[in-house]
Length: 139
Image 1 (spheres, rainbow, N blue to C red):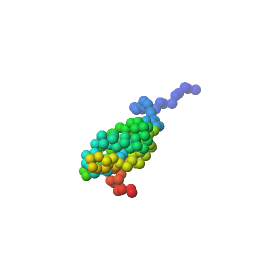
Image 2 (cartoon, rainbow, N blue to C red):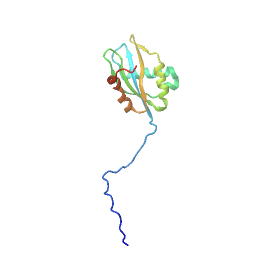
Image 3 (cartoon, rainbow, N blue to C red):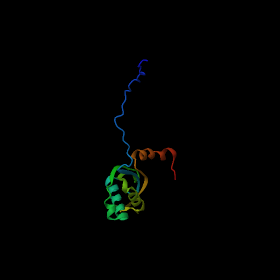
């Protein structure tokens, strides 16, 4: 009887150092669409609108929701889009506040926002943004 060992497989060149799964991200993201009669939408207007909406809908609790304005783009004839970040636990209340708010009046114009999309992952929202341009309006 001989002691023979089977040949070893050649070592792989890649190694997995660590694997992480994020089950519940700390933030949620919203894509807001604005319609306004005054041109030149900026981050300050978006922040003011969001704080007014959450304060009216949720009171002091709504005023305490931290809102990060990530991006604002203005349309040619007024209006535009905004991307904001809120804590994940406040997403439902914040989206409800934006939806229920009647709008802001300033400089003779009215600004109204609507929630186009919201979710836990910014990448999925950004990817779905161009879908309307490709496939047409879903409504």
